[in-house]
Every structure is written in C-alpha cells, then in structure tokens.
Image (cartoon, rainbow, N blue to C red; front, side):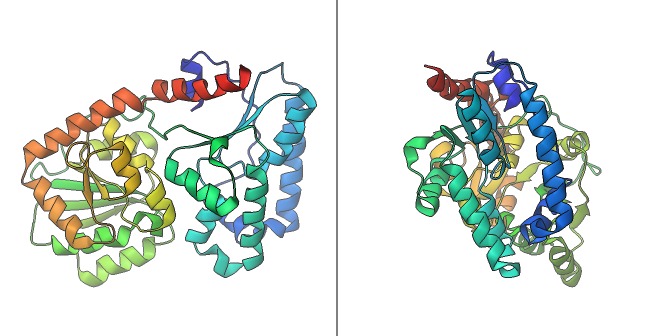
Length: 357
C-alpha cells in the first residue's frame, strides 16, 4: 500500500517503531500475555520512542495507521487532534475475529472481551476506515455498530515486483504439482487439502506441496503420516524469493477452503499472488469471490470443506491444459487491470483526496 501511494504521487513519511517480534508474539499477547509487566514495559518504551519520532516530523496532510493498529489508533487520534489533521485507519483484518478463530476466547474470556471493546472503540475514532470487501464492512457494522458510510474499499492485491510470471521445471518434469502456502489455521482449511490428496493417491503424478507453519501443522502432519500419503511434502516457511520459485514450479495454486467468517468475507492474498504469477487457482467458493471473479474464467471454485470436490477439481485441471491456460491468462489479465500496486495506490489516493477537499 505504501509503494502504491508513492506511485500515485503521494509523499509517504514513515513514522514507525517495531513492537511485535513475530506472529507468535502477537498470539501470546492476545492470549493474556499483554498483562505481563515485561510486555507492558515494552509497550511504554516503544510508544515513548514513537511519540518522540512523531514530534520531529515535518508537516503532513493525513496520518494513516496500518495493520495491526487497533491499539495505535488511540495514540494517533490524540496526536492528530493536536495538529488538526485527519486520521485514516487501514484495518485490513479484525484482530477480534482472528482471536476468535484461533480459539483464544477459550484461553482467556476476559482478554477476548477486552479486544472486542478496544476494537469497537478504535473504529469510532478515525475520519476514514479502509477495508478490502463489502462483506467485511457488513461484519464490522453488525459486530461493532460502525456505519458503512465510514468505510472505503481498497483490495489487498499483490506486489508484482515480487510475484510475476515465471515458469520453472518441477523437480520431476512428469509431476503435476499443487501448492498451498500459508499459516495452517482453520481459516485456510488445510485438512480439506490433505483429505483431497488422500483421494488422489492413485494419480501418481499429482503431488502436493504444503508450505508454511501454524497451529494446525502438527495435526496435518499426523493425518498425512497416519494415512501413509506419499504424495504430500511439507516445506517450512520460505523467504519470499524462494517461495516465488516454488510457486513457479507448480501447476496449480490452492487458496483457502475453511468456512470461518474471515475466510468467507475476504479474498486471500495468495489468490492475488497466484494471479500475478499467471498460475491457475482453485479455492473455496464464496459470495465475496463471485462478486470479483468468475468461476472457470478467472479461477476454479469448489464447495468449501469438501475434499471430494477439491480432488475432482484438481483431477479436472490435470486433464484439461486448455482450461488451465484460460485460468492463467484471465487471472493474470484481471490482476494487471485492477490489482497491481499502482492500481491500489490510485484507488487509495482517491479516498484520501476526499479528506483534503
């Protein structure tokens, strides 16, 4: 988003101090670690540095808070009011919803209630809120009571400087490789992928590569081991440059197949990234996706949490190179038309211009 704004002619001044060490660090805090004296002291030190950096800034027109900014919004609201400047929050995701889907409410009911309250209060402060889909806006209105008119839409898109068409031979040229990469959370429905792989064991040349880590990884590994699957390989998290090479060696990219609210309301980043690399995509069906894309034109949609449908779809594309080519070409075309860094920057800037008029 920052690069997109810069391409659209916006001068972006970075005012940032790192708080989080990793995704696991955030999960630990959301699970109750936020009340530990060591974490609270870390927050105080980081905010002190951030305020000092802010006070040294040259003049600006708008302050934008990015993800995850649920707690930063309160400080930003105070600071922008001192300078009489508009405040924009690019929410990207609800940390309350993410916490629910990761089962953090079962670890600490008090913490999950506090997160919901903080997020609701935070949504009421900025002059403009940014999300990526209409369905997510509807969820925020129902859950937090935030009117729709306070939101503007900017899709997630992908960075075409990193994700671009590249076709590399697989380790074995006879293999038809299907790749998933992500965080092994219920949202992604990795269990559905593994069950589909089980149904395709007899298709010797169809191989699955699962890249990443997350809370469901051990469960998935155990399922693969118990079923004796020899068509599934696991790869740990990769640097982005290496990940791109693994995607380039694959014939199909898998999206998400979970039935959680987050999964149904958003368009996952890996879908845009596969489009940017001109790769055919199979992903779980949703109204959100059908608003933006067409089945068997831009991507291949299957019923969620249905491994048989996923297995059938993989088998269909395996035997239909013409359809694979159609999905590759049309996915790449719609990406270049609407979801590149530059296009996102233009859209984002048009919303910011409203605050300056």
